Image (cartoon, rainbow, N blue to C red; front, side):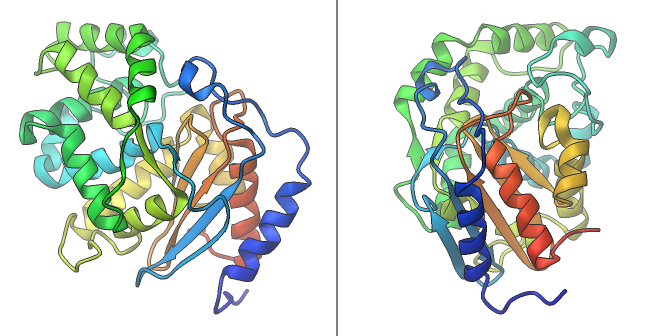
Length: 307
């Protein structure tokens, strides 16, 4: 199937179809600052390799990126830590909820993958040890790649997550008992909650993820990751990026993707483009109902897939 020279008509068609979608899911209510989001919001942006962006709906409206940021911290840490990172976190799907404590005890404090909360805490811990400011390093990277100097933390979301972060604290303390956390747990939690509180638009995140479509090359032409490392990040996104629904996401969408409970999802078409979609209504596994449907239609209409 030929890819349209302009993706705008595809996005317009998807937006029209999504408007008729029954049942948009419910916003994340375990983070009070996210609970009031309107599930009828919908935005979608596609960024091509040269920085050209197409968008529809609320594609320029900032939203809480949440776990989408885990893909970026993984890449940043991998660029500094190299293969050593994989001694501290695995690359396998967990099959359990993203905030589960179950597997850590019988796997000696080594999380299954970088995208469940335990694994993301390890990645943030290592990035903070290497940079002295994991969240600030992430923000600077997202600002540079998106071209949006106003991209920032949402203090209300940060406060809400901090006040309701007992499960993440338990995960961090448990891994620290196995020697898999190097920073003081309160420092790590502050960095992690700050990272997850970043607010960005579909356009921002589609542009910022472009290095994954360019096989590790940043927007200014410099190298963040080797081609092999970019492949690793995309592979883990495909197999682990949508919590315990990764198999269904791969079946429906056929792209590496990373979702967040703010309702956003980024997806990568290596060598072609990146996509970000946002709608805050979630399914039972924590993924945007309208977002997954929109990405399903995108790969169907364009033929763009890794399969």
